[in-house]
Length: 185
Image (cartoon, rainbow, N blue to C red; front, side, top):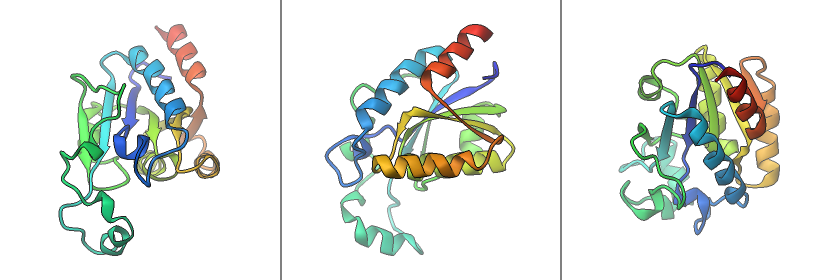
């Protein structure tokens, strides 16, 4: 981990935590990892939120025909941060896309050369964000035990796919990140 690394907590929201068809069965374990990581990064933490588009366009139309429950306003409790996740004064980037990497997240993280990703869903929003950031030249570390997928199998398959992008994308654990932070700090 470099000293300018930012932790990005991806989509730690009710819609992925419980009570929806998109909820991850391993959410609680991932959330525990997120809660362990946040204090180690101090002010260098950003959060993202997924929200449905007000008017789905293109391929999003048939997608939301499959998932109509998610077509609610962005201030609906479904899209609120999950219990135990509080962004406080940290930047929050809200997007209608799975991948969150772009100008807004880049600005929120101060153009950091390294991102440490945690959150949900490994096989969707984490994967999409990691690939785009790495493609843009950012070193990405995905914290495997602070992420959760749609299923344990999907989580593992997404991690296996991201491992193919080494050394642009590196898979790490919460303990490894915290230990490196202690050595640097």
